[in-house]
Image (tube, rainbow, N blue to C red; front, top):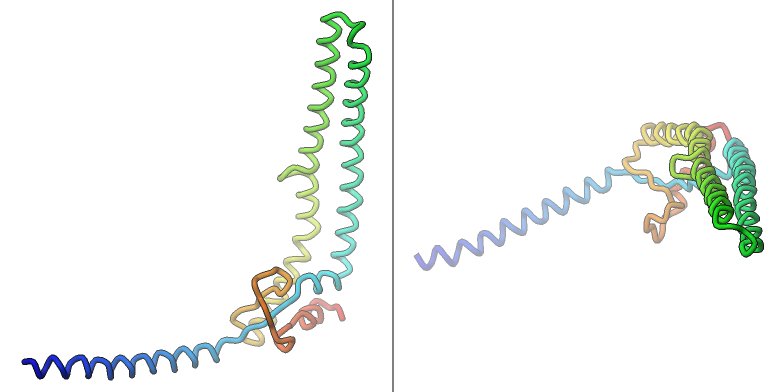
Length: 183
């Protein structure tokens, strides 16, 4: 009985090594079968004229809307300065009316700012309407290339995904631009 205990661990170690070697070989074969590629989305977007036009349009509308908000904020500041200068000459009722006017103007400015620049504001909607078609077009081009060339994973080099080094040989950014019709 003692003899069978001694042989059993030895046999198990032999099978364990065999199984481990098979798993390593299988993992190596699987890893070789997978193909990876990189794209540089910043580079791709810089080379698409419609993206540059969309960005310029967003900048212009953003400046216009910010100017509207600034006008209201300046009006609120002017009301407040006037109130401070004249407060000693105003009755309590006049003070209350002026304070209410200042608060109303500040509230109007804040609401306009939220309307234009809030999380679901006009700028967000405008950006989405201009950029989504471009992003969809890029995504479809990347997907087509991936299916054509058999890539299992395509990473964005520009997204700070923790890529320390990547061979330029696997960067398909120019291929994506060609697929989109840009050289």
